[in-house]
Length: 79
Image 1: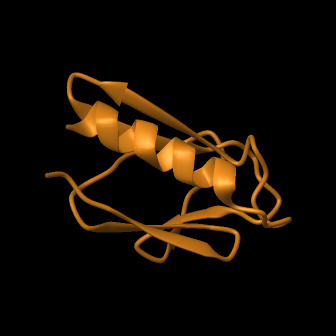
Image 2 (image 1 turned 180 degrees about the horizontal axis):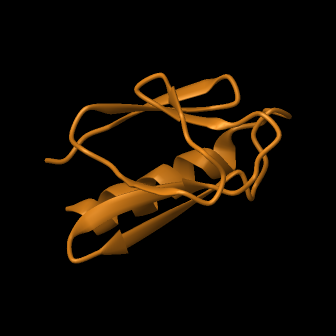
């Protein structure tokens, strides 16, 4: 469930104490069962599978995508 996964992801982010990842680092959005991410002009950038996201450009996440914000890495997967 995409919505549940994003909720759990936000809960995880709240527990991270890392000065390279701000509370407003990236925006995650769910639409029609798909999950999207957009870098929010962060200082330390957001990467999907090693590719730099341009600030303000929304990208749809796919199963097993690697998300890096600053120096924190996560794997997105859908059950």
